Length: 355
Ligand SMILES: O=C(O)CCC(=O)C(=O)O
Ligand SMILES: [Fe+2]
View 1 (tube, protein in one colour):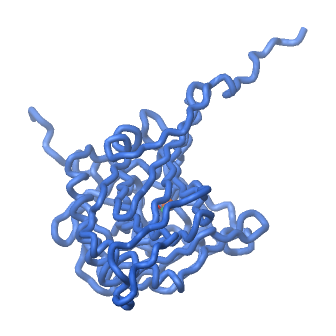
View 2: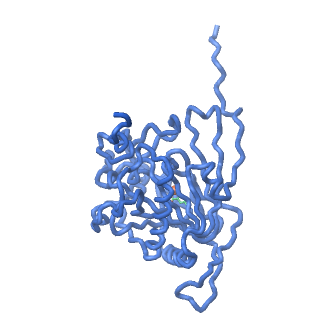
View 3: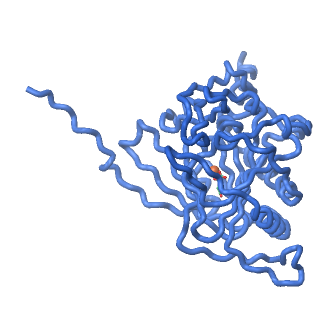
């Protein structure tokens, strides 16, 4: 007699959730680990920064990488900028000292922030620091401070340009290699409104009881989304293609064409301000058997009590080397790798109440 097995468990009975549009800051705060801030820069600066980045974007590249046996190209243009110092030590040599890698390929030292981006960054840092002060911190967040004592600094920025309705970026979470666990990333939108889409990665132990919901957040010109600590570990994000868009109508003319009226634009420029942690300096990143720096990934599917248990270093050479990498894989160990100070280090050194 054959032993009866329970039927294979199915996720089919779990109801699908309709996508939800989060159209204001309080809905974003209620449904996601992000906050949304509207009209964050003075209007003239927001417009000038849009023109600056749009002009620069003419020379930006579409990222290319190998996926299995073919080269794929991102359906938008992108570039990377670094600040003059790392924001923690006022040392101007960090750009030369740092070796930058993207998609498993060494790149030239990045350009420095253009003036309008520096100006905008001061506003962004103020908002991010204000927000972080009112939020609980996660154990693996960096607990150091910037040169002026701030909790969070931006020392690099990735910028993206999406022209028209079809340019997009697929679902992903940002690589943690130089950001470390639980980063805070501040994403500024300029130009035409596009949808920023978030979807939670449901942990394996819960896939039989619930489905992820798609969350759509329309991001207008001059708005900031802060992806707070835990967003990269728990959610993926994308900018999907969309059937239509509203043209952006700049309030001010282009600085080099002051006599002609401003022209409507179908472009969105995004700047994601990020903090490369000093305890995840390029020189400290383990290399795989191919000799290429590994990438740091969170174990998104195995979370307990809403927290990621593990992060691992994995070979990334395959993204460039005709899809051929090695099998290098190692769990990250903050303590053994000497990565600190984290919030948990600081809290465990605080005197216990009552002792
Ligand atoms: O354009 C955006 O808002 C998202 C960009 C993004 O996800 C990235 O640069 O990693
Ligand atoms: Fe991203």
